[in-house]
Length: 581
Image: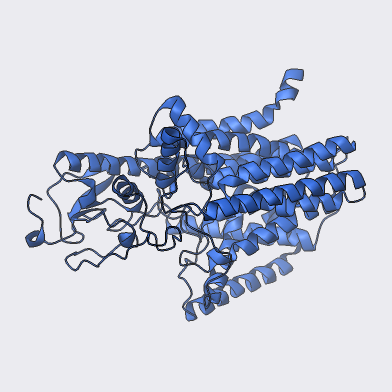
């Protein structure tokens, strides 16, 4: 029993659950997934040369993420999957630390385990776990900082409190090098903890000194990053004249948050029964308000968004494997009825949570429960971080792509302790057993979409190999931007990104091609070495018609009928280069 207590069995089970779900989904593919293809090439270059070299696509510093990926390359060999497994290691560790963090926040072991599983088995977390993007690395920096701050707040001895706060600064400083926004741990979360410890003068003085040192480290890192050739700077100023795009992005991001924690948020729906009349009025007013906002945004030509969950369509979308720029209609995975159920459940849970805030029940205390972290301390520690994080998202919200769902991972994780404590202290001491059933449903869905996405990627890799065997090089085929970026970097030093500052002449505008029968994808200007004669499509008759190459099929759980990818011509038959079939 002492051994079980030392190694924290519930936290280990959370970590193991992530690992098992990843294994079941079979997430291997020899190509880039979203942005991670360019990052993987950077890790491979670091392993080969010992130097970090940016390639024109990274706005994140990447930092320790690159060194961990390079270590995996040296240990296990050169492949896309090997580098991605370094993210799995961090994701498993994050699940462990998150469960212990929830316990420190005053949540009992059972509730902390269920809440952790609700987040780490969600489709967003599991999908990011099997990529080499910086989101999981940044989340670990935030969770580790929060854990250390909570330990510092609960330490009675000044020496122990100082040690934990210094650990929070060091961990956040080093791990934040992967994703700069994670440095809000040093800039906001640690100062919030120091505010709560302000009466302990020795702790306050040492904590301020550590925070100043951490801030100096951040400044030095940012100056170093800005001088790196082919790095892409991230500006904190919003784009002028895009106020409605900002409003649209934040409105849909707000509606997406309950979906990310659906097994927990949906537990607040019964709170609406406490006052049926008030709940009906609130639901009607909220629905009417959402409709009016959508109409106003559409009227003002804001960025088009869906009217049903999922709203931020980049990783959580109606398609089984993620958004893509391939030709043809993408197969639908989430039907209209399923999306309607998700929308009702998310909105109902959010309204129930609001009801529990403004009309709370009598507090329910667990018998023989040790003194928990005071509510006020939890709010002071978490609220400033969430507000600061939201403000920093404004420039992203004003950009052409808006806020991606993965940007919400850190604030959702920070809000999780507050939401679960709210339920535990004001509604029921234990999360209902049905929560485990809901978590299992979400986990199954997550495994399915991860499997389907990587089966889709593997089909593109097989298709590329067959095209090369037929004498068609990668530079003559448009396989989608994730694949094409890696192809470009095989032939050039960097992506042709107009935002690159150093060197000044890195970007060269690409002359438009008039012969293409396919519409240009957004990545056309960024990959000048890719001159597509063919492209990949879900429709065999897209663009200039079918090409004489066999289609490739890929499995789609839970359907028996597989998906199919075809090769079609980008240019008309009479315009094909010599030697092309």
